[in-house]
Image 1 (cartoon, rainbow, N blue to C red):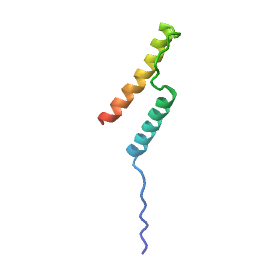
Image 2 (tube, rainbow, N blue to C red):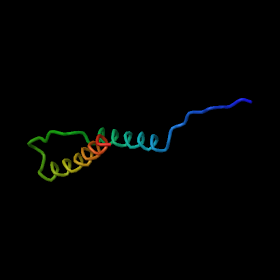
Image 3 (cartoon, rainbow, N blue to C red):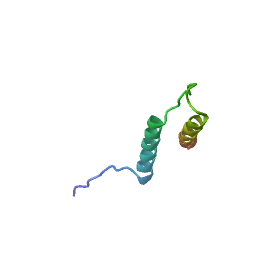
Image 4 (spheres, rainbow, N blue to C red):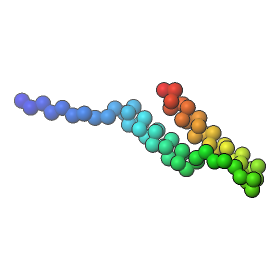
Length: 64
């Protein structure tokens, strides 16, 4: 009798990889940016808000 053993990823491992891929994509799309004197305060605040979400996700993933 042949027993075929297979290795498969658990659901948690797959979800973890998907989360890391998403955070990496967000990190690529919303990198830390040094504002320039030409930027309006609204633009600086908007970009800062985008980046703060990426930073929060990175921190949450590191804590787990």
